[in-house]
Length: 329
Image (cartoon, rainbow, N blue to C red):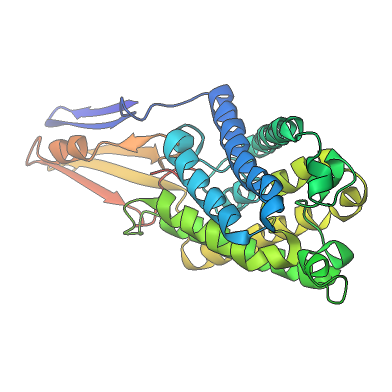
């Protein structure tokens, strides 16, 4: 996109271009990227939990898999879709004013499809005899062991033989809090104010740490797509408890977005005014705030300022324009 503003006494050119290495993408490529990223994330978290059950269900491998894979997925396709891979993240980014509401539903569908596809692959890979090895009745029982749950289905209950468990409200509180922290980290490190040079690493580390915190309580959802994917193949009691792992993360994401907006409001646009030394009013040009993959060419803006000493260019805005949908780097 390019804007040229001219007058008899001088000419000023302000170019807002899409960088060749960061092009605009249509809806379908963005949805494909979201489905791919969610597929990778669910494959890593649920897959590690499923096949690690034979080793006592250690938490650290699951946290490492989730953190490293989300880091890689964001680095790989985050520049296409924004790298959400999680309905709660998409909601938080949208509420924060960093993504369009018209894409919200489509992103959610793509994320659910990617998550279910990953769960289907894992379900098909469970070998014969593995269920008995992990004290499960069948493949669905194996999946149920890694599904998100509370009460008698919380990991603590399984470890203590039912002597201790986390209640429904404890599980809800944990999911709200850890998801709020996760989405808050994403919004913060992808803000223009942030000095973080590699946001995917910070996001991956945050996810891994929060999985460790929440795993003993609920098997750590933080992601409705992950919970839904597990429930599809686990069946049984998981459907009755699934609502908590949809509501909890979404509420947490909304709280993070509202907190972010309260302390880092996002401007709706950047206004560019151009005039001449003779006082001729050339009018206002309104340059939409960069969204998704729009990049303001700072070099072109600087060149425009130096075109004519008689021309005056002023730009007003805030220093917290989003870098895009986030978590893009």
